Figure 1: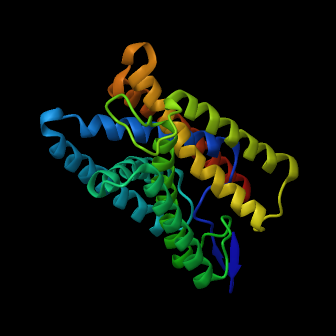
Figure 2: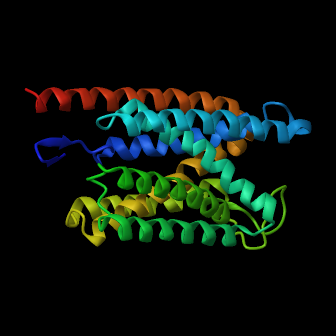
Length: 276
């Protein structure tokens, strides 16, 4: 927290712990499965209706929870993590829609979202002279933080599809696809993710330094394709797709609820200690 003229300004985002990363991975898994399940709920013959339905409920609820978090005096686990989970749904749809509407390849949409994310970083620093993820207190910092988070979801979605999609064969192909498949994409990027976390744990980069900020956001981006790839693998490929998007959504929702409750209890303990 920061004290300004005797007024305490609470950080509006969570501490970066292992539970944070686990919860982020679960949210991306849930977002991928829920987005696909919701878009297909009216059947293939009504795909457009399903997509509009998905955008409607996910974007509306996201706005509600994000508003509650921004208006809250401090980080609130329920508001924050529901915002993240709903953004995972909307971010999936947004990235997929850009490709479908424009006809661009995955490598191109990946580059577009990367440039968008960098643009938010530049605007964030130009406006606040600070890219710290530990001092999200002012309205400008909150706005740029959430814009950057949204960009990472879209970037991660496009990049994950680029890695997983084959160049030929199957119902979904892309001339630029790397063809790793869902499982291999999740495993390969998962190993990179663990290496980044190991670097942060072992070398403890200086707080708010370039290495600390860059490694955080790199890991944050990776959580999206990792969670989504495993969700798609277990939803579509595992045991001939026996789980499907519906059961993966149920499993993801159950895990997400447990994670949020743990985060909430930890936050309550921290509040009691700080006021003890």
